[in-house]
Length: 169
Image 1 (cartoon, rainbow, N blue to C red):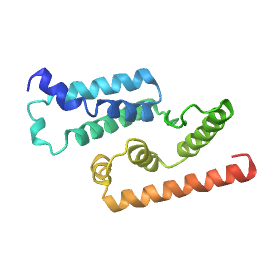
Image 2: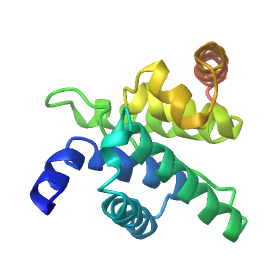
Image 3: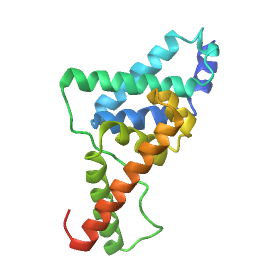
Image 4: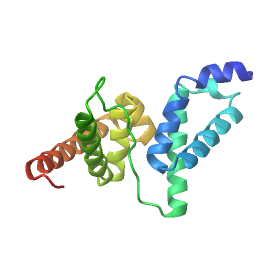
């Protein structure tokens, strides 16, 4: 496979790789390094990529594993979600502040979820991955992914309700 074919193959999902790395590592620089490392590993495997059913699933799995290895080596436990697609068209300043506040609360709630639930929320609700892809990436069965996502969403919903009812989290 030449470099143009390789670029054509990875272009549809390279941003997802970066976003997952950013989600896990928080630091933009570390996420860029992780994405670059995964792309390099894929390039080194490019002769055997045709053997894989889904190169995207392989890339996401490699990203997850690489980032978790990085986190383990640093003993880091402070993960954040970064999601900027939470605004309406031409919102007022008040609406922007409310949106930012709600997004901040959701991020804090997600950060307190168990690691597996954080990953599933990221992959399903933000990256829009299919359950089958998430199951492959996280090495789980689809039913377990659905149950964990349901529990995570319930926790988020309950905590947001508490926050809005009492005005504090």
